[in-house]
Image (cartoon, rainbow, N blue to C red; front, side, top):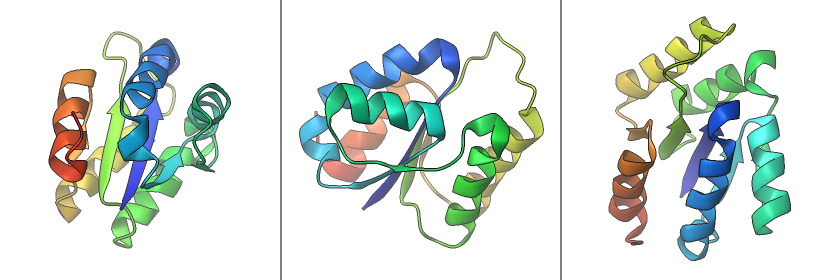
Length: 123
C-alpha cells in the first residue's frame, strides 16, 4: 500500500503527531511525501519515506502524477484553509486528480484517522 503524506507549514507538527500515532500501521506502507513534510516525518519518527520536492517546488504535482498513474492508494493532506498558498493551482490539481481517480483523500486529522482505519485497519 502506498500512502502520500502532505502538510502545509502550519500543520507539520500535527502531521508528525498523526504519523507517530499510526506508526505501526504506516511502517507497513510505502510512504510518499513532499520534501519538508517527509524530512520531518523521517527525522522525528524514524519511518522511511520517499521524498518528492517541496510542494511549492512541484512536489504536489509529482504526487499528483503518481496518482494519475495509479501508484498511490490514499492521500493524507493536512491543508491550512486559513492561509493563502502561492502554489494553489498545484494543490487544486492534486485534489482534482484524487477525485478523478477515486483515491481516498483526507484533508484534516479527523478524516485522516478514518482513511488510515479504512485502508490499514489501524486505530
